[in-house]
Amino acid sequence: MPHLVAVLPGDGIGPEVVSEAVKVLQAAGASLEFQAALVGGAAYDATGHPLPVESLALCKRADAVLLGAVGGPKWDKVEPVSLRPEVGALLPLRAELNLYANVRPAKALAALAGASPVRNAAGMDLVVMRELTGGLYFGKPRERRNGGSVAVDTCVYSRAEVRRVAEKAFAIAMQRRKLLTSVDKANVLETSRLWREEVTAMALEFSDVRVEHMLVDNCAMQLVRDPRQFDVILTENMFGDILSDEASMITGSLGLLPSASLGDAHGGRVFGLYEPIHGSAPDIAGQGKANPLATILSAAMMLQYTFGDIFRAQRIEGAVNSALEAGYRTADIMSEGCRLCSTSEMGDAVVARL
Image (cartoon, rainbow, N blue to C red; front, side):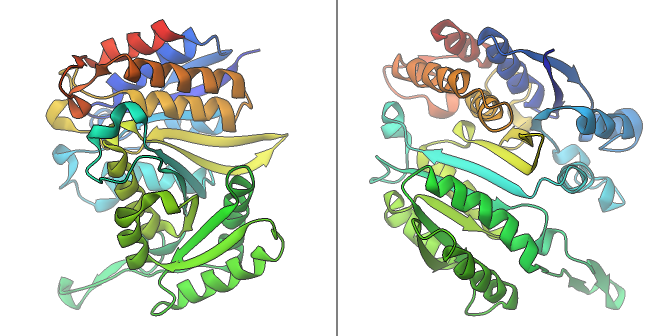
């Protein structure tokens, strides 16, 4: 029987890029069944909630989730805040599906060397492992006080939360260059001191992996100075949110970076939600300008991490590289001498190379 994939196109350019990813998965011959559901602003407009009960139920019975993007200026002032797409859909999805480990690879491709704003990006090949369901984004209380003149957000981490995401980071490091950089702010924050203690203790269990600790401000600087020094970056929720976007721009475009949000393994299979790291880009929605490659590569990650189909995952990655080497470009990565493509034309270029 085919594996069930919940497809959540979302808002803005989400439906456009998700459509191309599904097209590529079908062309690759993956045995998948796709069922679509509403999420984000589109769901709020239709049902009054950014994550309808039916959509969440579909995700829970699916083997994996493919997500586009959610949110946009149209819903930025929805009250209460809990009904805004980013708060009322993304955060509950991560919590309800227990998706605590976010994997974001960032690799500088030779075909796009000129697109990077960093001169020495060539050869960069790293993974950011971001803890996804703890820290400042989920801590309580989260409130306004003194008549709204004081705002409070709370950062909380437990050793168990640090350990489970660190285990996944160490496992990935073992399959790569065996270097793990744990990023924190241990000179200031108590949660970071706990984080560093736990990672240090775990390093004894993974003696083949070289572990270094780095403060987050230094890491942000080092990514620009020499991104090639990093292999696996392990960090908490907010730091990972920021650093992974920085790493993505070093590759040349947010439109190129995939991500996987993973939970625990059950029956030998790791449940995951797969999405591009970019937003809904409502300014170009419906114009065929969006870059679908991040979503296509997220689909390849789904084949690898959830379904163990490394062969087809590598085929898709190879087809993406081949299309870029042949000069196919969407507007965000366009350069002289290349062929400007629409969203669907870029998807077709990848399919042709499969």
